[in-house]
Length: 465
Image (cartoon, rainbow, N blue to C red; front, side, top):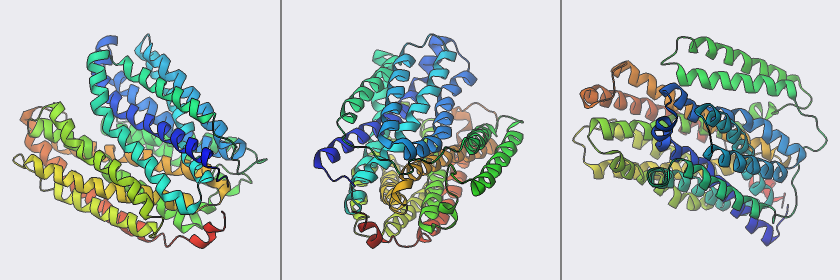
């Protein structure tokens, strides 16, 4: 393991900058969708693909590139991915049609998968176990900073400089990442000489894309249930293939015999499934149900990611001294409590109470995220760092898709196809409260998954240094 101070410094700055770009792009571009539609004269379906194409592409390529990084070098895949992200971001700003923009967003998702799936693996390869929680906490804080600045900075840039400026800013940040990345000395390979599982990758990517697409459109498309079934069949075939493969895309034993790894990823999936739709639901309630402007709603919602950004480094460092399962489980419990409190929301609920609950949720998310990532990365051998990082990222994206799908289904049940105007404020608020109860119960289940992972074997990990 490389303990060189210069390598540590450049690696941390490089990965933190890269970790900023993905959430910033995701949260900033949402505010630019109306402007993009106006410029290209696009309908709602095409505009939805500006967002969906990026998410599907990122999710599909995360695990394959994590495996490839373990085979050929994590820094190599990271740098190549950032170069692809930079170039595609630049061309997105010069997109000549909505179709071209969607295609470039797919390419941008590929680059994002290559960097997001390897960044955490690089940090874990360089920093020893006693420093790992603190470093991963700093990295998670950067992710939440991107989420916090996205709506504020992205909205301002879209309004004053045009939607293209959001992509240009990401290209500039990408250039800075590459400048720092070339200063990182060394390379980290965990599975050199092993062959790549092409057949397994094909099953996995097709199955995951079908699954994610189906659950994201299940409330609006009759064909979604058949696509969902196809996706599940392909994923079952993927698992069967992996169990028999000499060099699988992911070693199934990591999920069947490594309790800490399996339960930590399950906890991450449950956490994102239960919490990601919170901003979506509250945004609708604040604007449609309570009459707040979009800018006011955005400022209220900032309370959560700001608290997450402030506390994540502390939570990560705490998990270096206290078992991650304890810290993460407390965080999941606080998240469950916050979601349950939102189930009592009314039109007359004061803003300060909403902000207070968001602060509580921010504390819960911070206490869960970085300690949970520390547990995941510390539970596997060095040769699996790329796969471990990518698996965690995949759980995040799948959880986010499931969360939005559940929220959309519940809203559809109460509101139907009616336009979201103040006339439907009451059924919308009722649907949000039902969703908060469902998500709170889900979070309680996540507490048990988090506790079930057992304690990390710190002595074994310290032997790696």
